Each structure stands twice: as C-alpha cells, then as structure tokens.
Length: 136
Image (tube, rainbow, N blue to C red):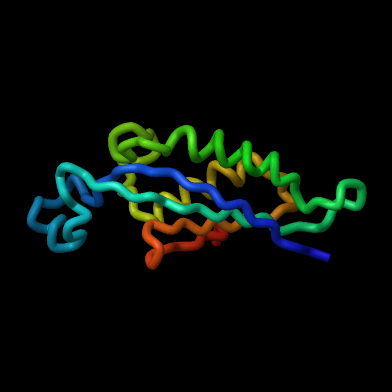
C-alpha cells in the first residue's frame, strides 16, 4: 500500500525575472512588471509530498519531523528573506521563475530522500499561481 504524506512550509524572497542576454525592452515585454530592475517579492507557499510504502515498524511513510527539518535546511535557510538572483547560488545564472525554483527545490530534496520514495514539490508564488514538479 502506497500513501502520500505532505508537509507545508513557506519562505519570503525577492527576485527579478529577466535574461541577461536580452534588452530591457525585451525583458519587459516578456516578463512585464516581474522584470523590475529593483526586484519584487513573494510570500511563497511550499507543499512537499512524499509517496511510499508504510513502514511496518513505525507506521510512517516518512517521519514528518525529518521532512520538516530537511525542508528547513535545504529550502528555508537558503531561500527565506533572500534576493534569489543575488544571494542564492543556483539562481545567479538561472532565471528564478516559479518553475525553476520548484525544480531546484526538488533536486535539493531528492538527494536527501530514500530512492524508494517518490517526491513532488508544489510551489505557490501567489494564492492563484502555482506549479508542481515530480522530476519528470
């Protein structure tokens, strides 16, 4: 029997959507106000979903305290109250769209989980705009 456990977290961060190889006019045309050279911020909501078999000894798919600590170390500490473009190494050359942020988070967490566990990351940039990534 496979089940999915979920852990919610959040972080606040600033970013700017732009490509260095494009003109300011083209960046503005493609990314709109999200390409503001002075950056803008979001209160990101994150849902991390882990799917697997129930461990017969513990009754857990995964200990949610361990998942909480993993999200804190791998996501909240490096991203919270940061300018993603400037302060987070992964985004110095990668445009910090919600899509790219979710892939970076997935990759960071995937490395720390048992291979038998499936992982999905859902990132809310706003209450109405969100993305999900399963590693596919």
